[in-house]
Image (tube, rainbow, N blue to C red; front, side):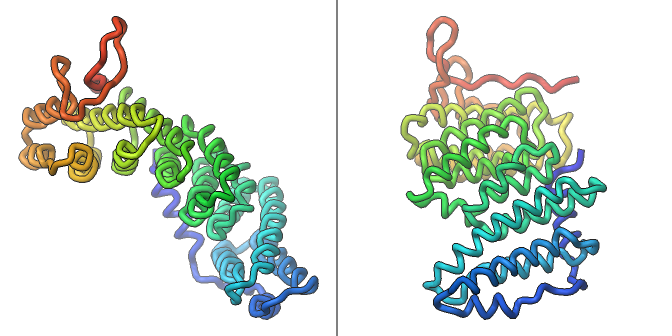
Length: 362
C-alpha cells in the first residue's frame, strides 16, 4: 500500500501548477479590504467575491488552474486595515456558506475522480483559511473512507493556525468539539492522519488533549504488538509529546508514563527482534526514533544525559542494545531506570516492566 505521504505529495504537486485559466476579478474586493468602515454594499461585495471564486473552483475543468483560485481567495481573506473586524466577520460567514454548498455539490458530481479532486481542493482551501467558523465544514469529512480526503479534513482541524485559536479561553467549547470528533476516528486513521491528531493533542491546552494523546499512543502500541505498524518515524513525535507531558500532566500522569514506557519499549524491541525481517528503511526509522527519544525525552525524564542506545546502535551490538532495554525498563526481576508502574498483575502485585513483544510472524 502506498504511503499517504506520497499520495498527498503527488496530489499537492498536481494542484500547484502555474495557473492558466481566467483569474477571479479582485478589484472590488481589494477596494473593500482597504476601507476602515464597511456598509451593506461592502458586505455584498465580499459575499459576491467568495461566491464567484469558490464557484470557479467548483466549475473548473482545468485542474492546473485550481490552485490559483485557492490562492486568490486566501490572499483576499484579510482586511488591509489591522483594526478592521467587520471584514473578517463577513468573509468568514461567506466562506462557511459558499464552501459548504460547493462541497455538497462536489460530492454529488460524476465521475468520482472529478468529485474527489474538487472536494480535496475545497478542503485545502478551508485549511489555508484557518477559520474556526469552518470547523463544521471539516467535521463532515473526518471519517471519509477516502484517506486523502480524511487527511485534509483533519488537517483543517489541527493546523497550527486553528490550534492557536482553539487555545483561546473563548474557544474552549469548539476545542472540545474538535477533540471529540478526532477521538472518534483515532481507531480507523492511517499513520499520517494519526500523526496530525497526535501533534494537535500535544499542542492543545485543555486536559482533554491528554486523553486524545493516550488514545493515539494506544493505537500505535497495538500496531507494534501485532507487527502491523507502518511509518515508525511517527513515534518520534508521539514519544516526545508523552515525554513532555510526563513532567506536567495532572490526573493522567501515571497513564501517560505507562504509554511512554510501553511504546518506547516496543520500538526498541522491534528494532532488536526485527533485525532479519524489517527493511533497511524501517530499521533506519526505528534507529532515528530510538536515538532521538533517548537524547531528548529519556534524558529529560531521568535528569541526566544518556547515550547508551545510540552507542549500541552505532556499534551494531545487539546484546548491548538488549542490556540497555533491561536497564531502562527492567527485566522482570528488577525495576528499570524509568521506574514506571505498569499496573497490577492477576495476583495484585505491581508490574514494573512493559509487555514483551512477540516474535515477528513467520
